[in-house]
Each structure stands twice: as C-alpha cells, then as structure tokens.
Length: 187
Length: 119
Image (cartoon, rainbow over all chains, first blue to last red; front, side, top):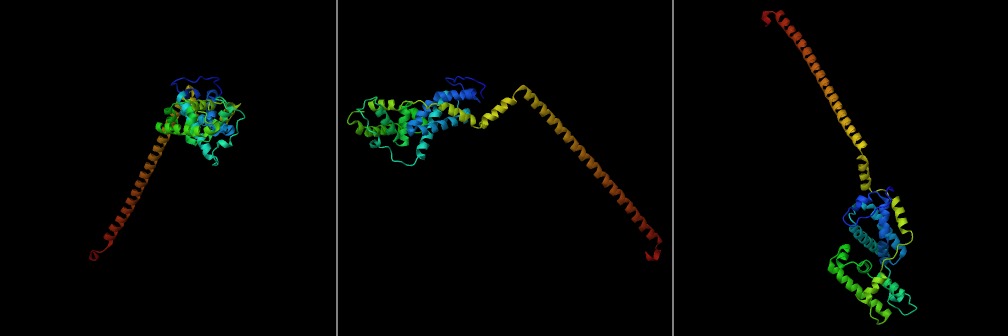
C-alpha cells in the first residue's frame, strides 16, 4: 500500500480509481487536499470543533471504503460535499432537541461592530448554526463553498426552486435575527 | 450581493482542519479492513501474473485429465459389474434348465412305469 510515494490527482476525466487502487499515498493526498472543505462544512453545521472533526473523519473513512466508486475529481468533490452535509444533518438530528441559539444567549461584543468584526463573524456563525438543518445546508453550501443554486440542488437532491425559496427564507431569518444586534444598520 | 451575504461569505469561509487531522484520518484508514472489492481485484491482479497464469492453465489441464481418468475408471467398474450380472443370469438359467430336465425325466419315468389301465 505504501509503494507509491506521490500521486497527482487528475484534473479531468481520468478515473481516480486507477490511481487510488490500494494506494495509501493517493488517499493521503485526497485527505490533505479536501480536509479544510470537509471540516469547515461540518463545523459550520455543528459549531463544535470536536464533533466537526468526528464527522469529517467519518466522511473520509467512508471515502476510503468507497474509493472504487469515485470516478473523477469532480465526482470526488461532489461526493465529499454531499456525504458531509448528510452526515452533519444526521449528527444535528442525533443531538437532544436543545432550544435554538438565541441572539440573547450570545455574548455581547465589547466594541462597536464593524463589517470584519470577529464578533460579527462569531455571531453570524452561531446564528447560522441555529437555523433548521435544511436551511443551514443551503446557507453553508452557498456561502462557504460559493456554489450555484443548481449545484446545491444537486448535492441536496432537491428541486432548484426549493433551494431558492430556502435560501430566501434563511436570509430573511438571519436578517431579522441580526437586526436586533446591529440596530438598524443595514446588513 | 448585499452586505449580509458579504458578511456570511466572510463568516463561513473555510477553516483549516485541526492540527494533525489528516494524520489521524490516515492512521484510522490503515486500521480499516481492506474493502472486499479492492481485495478481490488485488487477488485477480496477483493471479494475472504469467507464472500464476501458467500455474492455472496447468492446474486446469491436470483437473481435466483427472476427471477423465475418474470417468474411465467408473465406466470400467460399471462394465465389470454388468459382465458379472450377465454371468450370474446365465448360471441361474443353466441351473434352472438342469432342474427342468430332471423334472421332465421323472415325469417320463412315472408315465412309463404306470399300467395302461391306470392311464
């Protein structure tokens, strides 16, 4: 398994399975290349580094067991996003039904918020984590991965119109939740 | 894009995975059993080597020869059993024939000894 030191993943249609056949080095490259994406997706869903790491690790181990089925680089990225979202949604549903994070529960910032304010960032992350799972999936895929609506629809296996409406509703919810904190400052 | 979307993009940017994450994943993966499909393919790849190919061909030929020998022995045994059964039938017919001749002779003798008035 350790026979090949480095493997360059193909850019287009070259079958991945040909390269990753029993090849630990190829798998390691895949993990290194995509760990940030998978971990971040899980983290923005769960807002808990420990659980996010657990989910991300599980996703990669599933990938290891299914490497044969992955045909292209695009397929790999799509698969990772899809499985991470599903796994994160399952993880959220496993949690005891805690009341969604309220803005009042979030610590007040010590200073006036700016656009790049870390307090605003933290608050946004928490508010996103308090959205219903389906809405959260759309928001995270849209703003972390910067995916088009059609791509999100494909990953979540829902109609594109559902993605549109979920996105609009989610943004509206976020806007309302945040307005109380930033006052009337437009978001 | 409005300000909220811009802020979301900043807030939800990718984060680096925890220190040593990839190493932990790879270590876990190494502990996993080999997936069955991969194991099977590796076995086939191993078996496809010329040495093993010839070994398989030889084994197949030997198997066919062994099957032929076993079949022939079985046919021989069946034929021998058939011969034995035919011999037994002949013997039985011969014995029956002898007995019949004895019985016919006795009947003839009885007829010859009896007076004509009793007939």
